[in-house]
Image 1 (tube, helix red, strand yellow):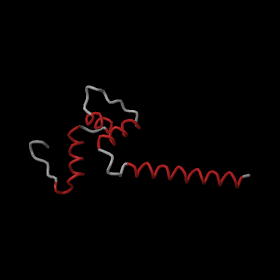
Image 2 (cartoon, helix red, strand yellow; image 1 turned 90 degrees about the vertical axis):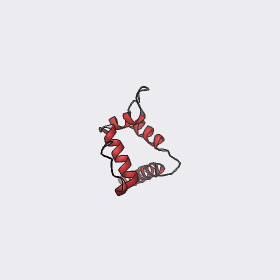
Image 3 (tube, helix red, strand yellow; image 1 turned 45 degrees about the horizontal axis):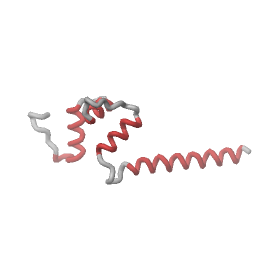
Image 4 (cartoon, helix red, strand yellow; image 1 turned 120 degrees about the horizontal axis):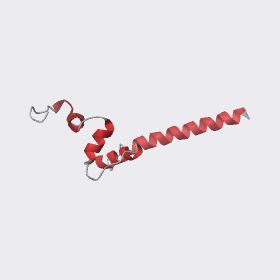
Length: 90
């Protein structure tokens, strides 16, 4: 009996691992827009998106950073070392 229990447990762990990997890969597909990914992040974290607030403001708030910091991080991610913030826009 113990042996079958551990086999079932091992199979369950493999299934969960495969499901997690599939979910992570689904966001790497180019057919997901940034808006869809942000909305999914907010949904999974049970964050409400108030209609009077922009999606990026809600996203930054959920991450615990300012809009300016979110913008800086997204631009740095998109352009890497080529991105140099202007002194006016920070």
